[in-house]
Amino acid sequence: MLELPTYDDVRDAAARIASHAHRTPVLRSRLVNESVGADVVFKCENLQRMGAFKFRGAFNALSRFTPEQRRAGVVTYSSGNHAQAVALAARLLDIPATIVMPHDAPAAKVAATEGYGGRIVGYDRYTEDREEIGHALSVAHGLTLVPPYDHPDVIAGQGTAALELIEEVGDLDALFVPLGGGGLLSGTALAARELSPGCALYGVEPEAGDDGRRSLREGRVVHIDTPVTIADGAQTQHLGAYTFAIISRHATDIVTATDAELVEAMRTFFTTMKIVVEPTGALGLAAVRRLAGDLAGRRVGVIISGGNVDLDRFAALLTG
Ligand SMILES: *Cc1c(COP(=O)(O)O)cnc(C)c1O
Figure 1 (cartoon, rainbow, N blue to C red):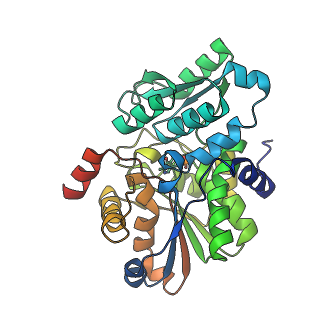
Figure 2 (cartoon, helix red, strand yellow; figure 1 turned 90 degrees about the horizontal axis):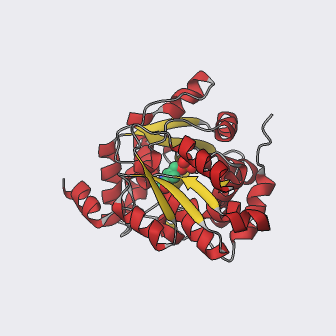
């Protein structure tokens, strides 16, 4: 039996990260509210340290290392934001960090990870297994593996974004959360079920990689090939054991968005709200637009999960 994290773990994580993570702003847009017909609040984790919510989970996990674990170091695998998060948290806590990263990761994410002092080991995301590489490094060098989503301390840390949101705005009728491996959605579930029990909770994943939706329908973790989508933060192949256990218990549903809908949402964030959001970070708004008919007059929360996108790629997506 897995020992699942609880709301108390989210609370403890919030205390642990308080003096290092930003309490990110909550934004509203009159234009979005009018077009959707609901009262929509956005939790802006694109403005979190290193540009995504992942700092929360990484810092929480690393701050729980024993002195021996700190000395030996941390290893992880990530398509980008978790890598930066672990590298930054490790630097703040003075822990050596090794990051297994795909050769085709966005340039800004690679540069930022190296900038925080992380040692990068490359791999091919279409032919090699990053979990195997990470595990082998951990065994060979005594490093502690902190995976990007399927870990109780990571999940508890990610839940602190929703905790802050609901503390600030009060009860919500629905909450939309980008979904990759499910760390953010399961942490959010722990916070939302305690603080706003009636809130409908939606995971949103790219249409090209709807393993989460299928997992929920089939009642087991469905594995898929690496999906081809602009949402590089959600190119995961499967949910985890912890995340599936929490999500299948608490999520209302899992919905999808196309790449075209993500670009449209990124355009809205830029032109009406003046914020830069990466494709994966736009999943929530894209889903709110799809389900607008069901959300009329409701109080709707959206987690904007990240803002790390190269300038050239951002421009190409929005003008392409
Ligand atoms: C990692 C990531 C996600 C997905 O988070 P999971 O915990 O893997 O579900 C969504 N958006 C951004 C920006 C991310 O970096």
